[in-house]
Each structure stands twice: as structure tokens, then as C-alpha cells.
Image 1 (cartoon, rainbow, N blue to C red):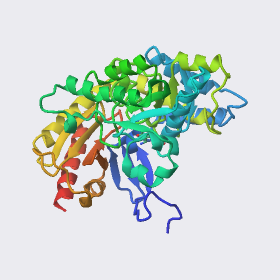
Image 2: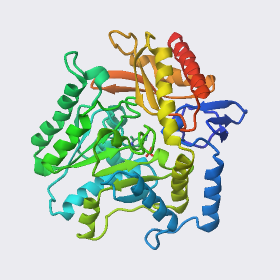
Image 3: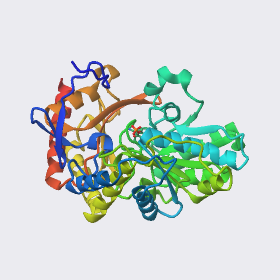
Image 4: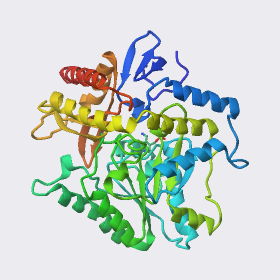
Length: 441
Ligand code: PMP
């Protein structure tokens, strides 16, 4: 009997024993195509020899040095690389150990920024109902996934939520995509005015929504409008690209496709590609300068921040992406995946929407296509899809979520950036079989 409190006490999990390229192997030698990159983590695949060499080299040199005493060459190089490869406006890096840590730090950073400026009364965080920002208390409070929040609500800081940008379900028939984007973005302004502009810290959103709704991209112009509103009221735009960032959508940051730059952003997952736990907050010079000319430090910190082994993994991921032109492959294979999904599911009666960017794609599962009616929650379709997929040697990321009272089952795909066309065909074929079997069950 396992002595681990797994995600479910009823879990009957296979034991992962090895991995190579896009596949994981269990202890019985069965292979699973990692079509979800775990949870959009494994961007360079498993057992990458160049990564292993980089980690061995760092381990030989230095495994750990506390950031209260030292900086390290490897952490400095990673920060330099992240800033150099980001658009103007991203100037500094704060290294932590994962996505929730990055979001916690981002929220506290935003608050301290205003305290440094003497604007102590700012206390409100505005986020969106369709969002997940992590499971620690601050990040959970910002998130809009009621199922995850409900029992912890008494422990959560007060946050405020507006509608997500979710065109498949919410755009009115008479509205263009652009008009829809403006309408939902304007909810931010309404909320700021309701709370009092001088009391608001910032707005938090995933650039492309991940786990709660399945690779939901914003409509054109939405984030431009959001940026405009944030600027008008002097509040910070905090983007969570923990899942959708670090190349997953075809550009290093997903926001690059929106023509905006956030003040603060969180990254993780693909940053270390699963080889080490690592996350980071990226921030603009104005945030840094407020600390520098004020108290001189960000009042935060973790024992393992800036960990040399984690930084080495982060740097190696970027080296491998560059050396093998993997962002080009994300764009090309992403388009092919979209095409294959449309061929297989474009007229499937139980697939309502096919969406996403780059190698961050999803299908939304519905009971009936034309009415978009979802399956009843009791059907637990996401659980069945995962089971059927695993039986067929396929890892996908199915979730069921409820947004504004409407349940949405979806299956998220986030395969490694090294994927090829033949492997995509196998993924789509197995997913189709798994979905049909889950619905028939
Ligand atoms: N933000 C987003 C958008 C995420 O998808 C996740 C993880 N699924 C997190 C934050 C939290 O990251 P972690 O699990 O590394 O704490």
C-alpha cells in the first residue's frame, strides 16, 4: 500500500518508471504518449540528453547557495536570457520554485509597489471568474474556479471577479468578436469604478486560459482594451502565463500576440520543462525602481528561490529551444494539430469547440453540438476520457469546470515542442477513440 497521500485517496495510479522523447513508460513497460506535457510542463520531452548534460554539469559545480548570501552565475544567466528574449517592458526576474509561488509573489509585489509609492490604500485585486492561478491561499483567492475555492473560502483574502473572455459560450450572435471583446473588457472599468480607482491594485488574468476552461484564447483586441483601462486608472496588469507561456503558444510569451506588455507576469511549467521545479515573476523597470528607491527590497523570499539546479534547467530549456528551432515547430505543428482536430472532431456531435494557439489546444465536449448543452456533472466525462485515453497509451488533460453556472468539459492538449506530424496523427486518433468510448460507457 502506498504511503503517499496522492491527489485522490482512491487513486490507482500506474508507476512512472522512465521517459524518452514524447513518451513515458510505466513499471510494466507500457508506453504513454505525453500529449499534455503532464500539465503543459514537458516542453522539450523526456530524457533530453542536452538537458541531462547541463544538469550534470551544474551539479558538479554547485547544487545550492542561499540567495541571502550569494547570487550564482547560472541564475544570472537565466535572468539575462529571459529579459533579452522578452519584449521591452520586461526588465527584471524574480526566481521561485513553481507557478503558485510565482503568483503569490506577483500579488505581493503589486501591493508593495503601491506601498513604496505611498499609495497604501490600494488593496483590491480584480481577476476573472474563468481562471486558475494556483492552490496556495493568495493564488487560490485570485482564481475564479469555485470548485477549488469553495471549502477554503473562509481563509481567502477578498478578491473581485469579472467575466472571462470566452467567446464560444458568451459572445452574442449579433456581436463581432471585437465588439464582444470590448464588452467584456469594459467590465473591468465598471468594477474599478465600483471599488474606487484609488483603492485598486491590479487586474490578474491568464493570457490564454488553461486548466479551468481549456486553451481559451482572448478575442482580438480584448487585452489591448484591458491594458488601456489599466493605464487609464493607474492599476497594474498582472498576467499569469504559468501554463500558456514559455513558448507554448508559439511566441516566448503569449502576450506578444496581443500587442501589449504586462507590468508583472508569472511563468513556470515550461520554464523548467519538468526537469526541475522552477517558476519566476517577470517585471518592468518601474516596479523594480519603486523598490530600489524605496525600502530597497521586496519583502518576500523562499529558501529555494534562485536554486542553481532549477536555474540550470531553465537555461538549458531555452538553449534547447533555440538550438533546435523549437518555436518554429510549435507554430507549424500547432497549425497541423488544429487541422487534424478539425478533421476528426469538426462535425462530431459531442465536440462543440476546437480552439487554442500553438501547441496549446483543446476540444470542448458537449452533450449536443447545436445547443452547446453540456453533459450532466454526474456523468464525470472528464474522468472517463482520461481513463480511456490512458488505457490507449495516451496522456491528455481532461477537466470539467463550471463557469457562470455552465458546466464545460474539455480536453487539453499540450504536447512537447519536439512533436512531429506522425505523432500528432496518433494522438488525434487515440483521443477520438477514447472520447467515443468514454461517451458510450
Ligand atoms: N497558474 C496557472 C495558469 C496554472 O495553470 C497553474 C498550474 N496548473 C498555476 C498557476 C499553479 O502552478 P503550480 O501548480 O506550479 O503551483
